[in-house]
Image 1 (cartoon, rainbow, N blue to C red):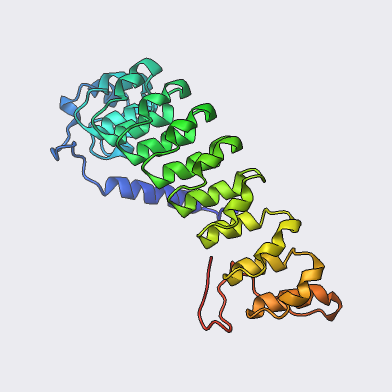
Image 2: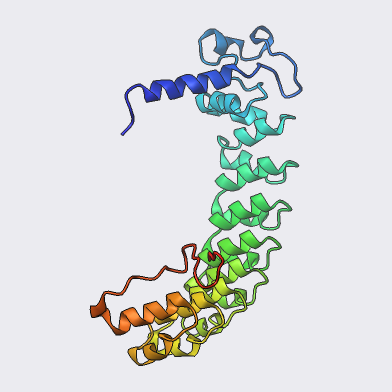
Length: 286
């Protein structure tokens, strides 16, 4: 619940933050409403220095101006200040927005990527800036995500792995980045999942093993990583629990005993996703 008066304080703080910044243009020159082409708007209280001004260096003030006067955005698509063009892109129609696809500034192109119709996003697939391509990957139609499968940036590929059709995920199974392979392990079909359960990265193996059917778990009960064995012992068939109760890791052994003798109400061992300090003498976190 919002405390009484808290919204008033928040608005006051925002106003203070605005008023604390000088009214200067993008080149640092002091602004004056008397020489502005929007003086008539100012006279009607429809724009205000240090609050809502298209010529201000501060992006929030530019945004307030275009929010009040979206039809004026088209006049500023060639403005020399990138912030003006980037904010104007939020209010342009598709025809004029398309003109900014090749803008020299990545901030402008990133703004365009948020609004460009999905069928036109292919124009930004090979943009040199990662932030632009990340926004493209978030919005591109699923059928076109294959164009980003081998993007140079790992996070673009992570997004692709989260969105692409599961039948296409095998293309990313051997990705150089473990975070990408872990996303693949979250969604790939069962036919391919056992391969990821043998991945070189512990976090990939753990993700895959959590999805494996119980019948496949015995092959991983001797994994070198205790976190993998812990995950296995939580679901493995009962006939393997006696052996796992003698595991070298205390948490794994206790989990096996707890499943073998539930009536003993054995203490629940620490889960490997939590910091653990025991026989290892160190803290582990996945």
